[in-house]
Image 1 (cartoon, rainbow, N blue to C red):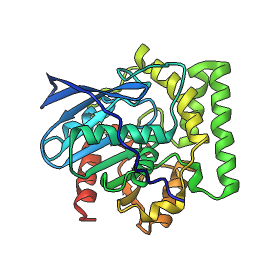
Image 2 (tube, rainbow, N blue to C red; image 1 turned 180 degrees about the vertical axis):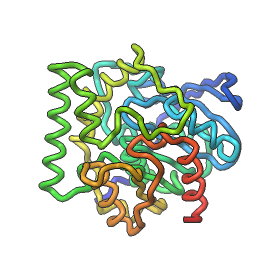
Image 3 (spheres, helix red, strand yellow; image 1 turned 135 degrees about the vertical axis):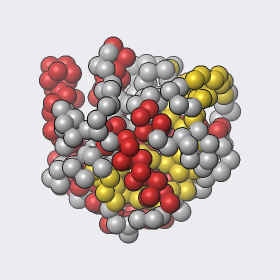
Image 4 (tube, rainbow, N blue to C red; image 1 turned 90 degrees about the vertical axis):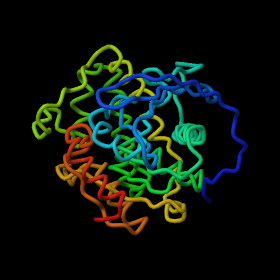
Length: 300
């Protein structure tokens, strides 16, 4: 049974303004959706490309990457509900991955009437997979970079990694971000030193806003991953071109890499390698943008 839906869209309201970024003008807007108001940004011209971020990342997470894409794509980024400027009606409540995917549907329906390109990173990749299943015709091509989707794995492996995520939540509850972050990095194969990053990048500061985003991500989105309802068999019949991707330096033993390889088998597409590791979109924006252009153009 697939997740395809034919429910009537809830009326939405879009409010926009214009700001100037480092290289191009950005249209900044909000969208009313059930239970939340979503903040989004649009930059550049060309085919529409939605970037759905990983972890605690908001619309500003991939500024360096967007800078290198906005000359050829109309790039949409957004704050997932519960993060940064996307306000929740009930802040104590999280969201399911289905709700996140429906947010993507509402956002894209409000901003374009054509099928879009999508880059989903980590949690954003799982959201893209749900959106492809639930909303046929919405996404033309989805680059799914290391989806954190235990349901893509064999049952025993799936259960082990779901328990791993629950243990990380418990560690966070007991010891806070200082205790949990190193273990999250180890679990996903992330190099916290960014030793391999491209030169000249300014790391995102660990300010109060980012700390609050991490809190929401670990408390609520970890639960959404563990309680996921994704039907892996449905992914082969979405009509979306799904391109599984993984970082060149991501350890082959971590579960996000295993999820990417399992996705490749499911959809019958070879695993595409991208520069950097799990967060190559932020650590290697120049090389990552070049690779993404190749993949979206079908030249590799």
